Image 1 (cartoon, rainbow, N blue to C red):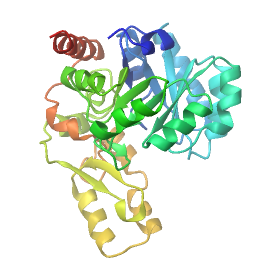
Image 2 (image 1 turned 90 degrees about the vertical axis):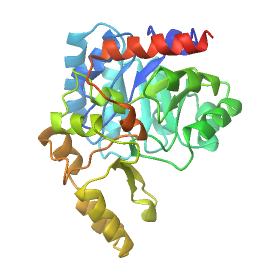
Image 3 (image 1 turned 120 degrees about the horizontal axis):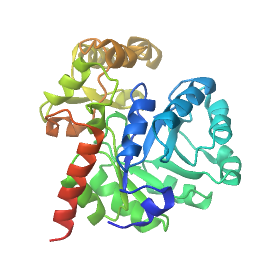
Image 4 (image 1 turned 180 degrees about the vertical axis):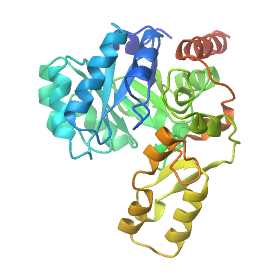
Length: 307
């Protein structure tokens, strides 16, 4: 598994932690990086100065590379993009949009830019504009999703671009890593499993909801308005689906979910909060350190790929 990604990013293992809003903060990012992967700080909707503080806190916990995920729809994206340069971050992943407007600034600063894509067309466009790699994310993942599965998206993107492809969506153990490599990926991005890590600041109610989840426990809301989100079923998702079926507007539905991710992550409200998690939640059965998770996954993947 000695691919281009570890060398490109200066990491030991081809594992990247997802930039999950409210979850991907300095404790988790530093723990993943210390364990040999690439930890990410999730910019989400946070102002630039909040992201700056998170970066500095992470650097106090590790001297290994860390990255930042920029949510391009954020009203603070311009400020966050500048903070990343000012704080000497060397790896950026982007989601929810097109990062072309920041490419020149980031590349001039020596930053490796890795956009998250949900289609071959966007992957090819990102390569043309200077992306160093792309994350091909299938709809099995938690949070905002596209329509293609990881199984179909990754090989098509790998065939279409010459830069490295990182697979995401539905990957949570060594079997998933091995499968991703067979599809043409050179690394994986993992989110849901790291949510239940011992270093994660997520409320224990949220962690236990994932650990106890069954294979059929995830639901997708928001498809009627073109903004699908995957999370675990609860009172909030049922209410959302009911309102969707009644034809409520996107604004009304957005109001229903306002602040609910924070409510679940920090306050532990897994009934009325948004419990974002991928379809692999049903495979997760225990809390471990990030180091234990990564070493276990890499050992399993190595055995499978060595057969």
